Structures are given as C-alpha cells and as structure tokens.
Image 1 (cartoon, rainbow, N blue to C red):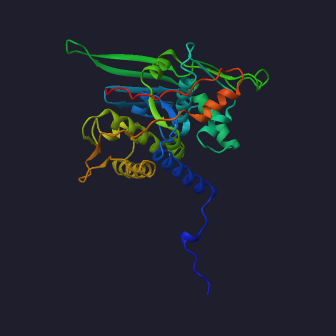
Image 2: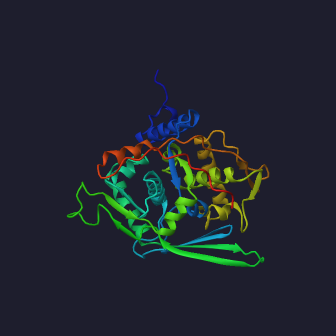
Length: 330
C-alpha cells in the first residue's frame, strides 16, 4: 500500500536547508560563546532604512530625539533591503583595521562581502551588491537631533553627510583596477567618528541567519541594543508618536494590522536565533515589553575578516579586535 505524501514528506530546498544550517550555527555560537564580532551604525539601528524599493528618492524616519533623512538619485533610489548589510560590513572592517586615521578601509574582492554574510555567490546577488554600493554613494544622509540645553531650551543639531564620499571599487575602472590593487572606501569623518565613539556590537552568526529578512534583522539589532541600555522593564507602546512602530523605522507607512503581523513574524524569527530573548508583546497587546538583558556574550574576533586582511600582503595583519562595549543609554 502506497503512503500518501504530505507536506512533511517533501524534501526541503537548498535554500531552506541553508537557512536551517544558519539558525543552528547561530544557536550553537550563542550557547558555546563562539559568536564573532560585527559592528553596526547607531543611527541606522535607531531609525533603519526601507524594506523595499521606494518609488520616490526620499525617506524620513523619527526615533525619539533623532530624525534621519535619506535623499538619493532618482535613478537609483534610497538604499533598501539587504543594502543595510553594506554599512555593517564597512563599520566592521573599519574596526578590524584599527580605525585608520585616514578613515579609509581596503579590501580585495567584492565577493568576500557575500561570503561574509552567507549570501549566494551568483550573478543576481553580485549585481544587487553593486547596485547597493551605488545607492549608498549617491545618498545624502541628514541626521537631526534635539538637544536640551542647560537652560532648559531645546535646540536642533543637524549633520548632513554621505557615507562614502570617496571610493575606488572593482566596478568603477576595470582596466586600471587589477586584483593586486585593493578596493578603497573613504568614510565620511562624521560616520568614522560615530563608529569610534558609539560602536554597536552584533554577532556574525545571527546576522547571517537573519540576512534574508531585513526587517527581522533590524528588529534584532534594535532589541539587543535597547535591552542592554535599560536598567528596568520598559513598556514601549506599539502605536503613537514614540511607539514601537515609530522607533523601528522599516515598519512605518503600513496599516496597523499589517505592522502587527510583521512584528509577530519578526519576533518569532528573533527567538529562533535568540532563544532566551526576554522581550515580547504584553498580554493586552498594547505594549512591547523590553527587559534588561545582555544578549551577547564575549565576542570573538571576526575570523573571516582577519583571514582576508592577512592574505592581502598590502595589509599589515592586525591583532584580534577587543570586545566592544555598548554605548551608554541616551
């Protein structure tokens, strides 16, 4: 007698198998203190970038005292989706190279970025990476912060910058750019100082496991940062001017029902990689409860980047990067 085939009998695709392997790797690294270090940019953790490509070359988000605006080329649009991995790569490489004084980071191959985050090494993903670099190169980032002065008055401090004002990349000059010449990216002095003063540590294994879902990745980075900074349980309303939907910028601009559905899905994905995550939606469904917790154990040096720097003879091998402290609460 033949067995009826059910959905559980169907073999998983290679992509599903890869996701399961990355989840297992993330949990194993967390359990055995083998998490490898990445660095995120604080303004982008607070406000985020769009999940999908926008029709207009303009994006604005508010999070507490911060407002971030992105203005880009009409042909390219503002960065979105997995473009958020590029600043993480640059900040991590900047720290791995001991924060060079000239604010310039160097690496040999574009494909190494895909390998670092466990992305497919195919033409489609490679072109997507190239377009992402172009979007960041053409995007003006305006960061506005409300500051309370000693006399009680409120002033606004504004900084406008481009993440990569100067670069020499593999696709810009194919004739002159040989394999023995590294890619060079000079970071804006303001972004470089932000990385030096307020590095947000993250772990490579979890970022790889969530890279296919940018919204869940943003939500994870936001939670590990906020949970470390608070000293007592904090009830963040889901809606309202300072609510969770406003703080996690990529949730904005959608119906409330859809935002709640995405939030539930993302939190489920976060808990698959961070099993002891203490945070969650309150019983009445009105608040997201943040609890004090140190989500990351002792972070190991990023072995992949250290290997890349060592293999490139133009670079002087650097010692393992020390553990990054979290920035103090705002």
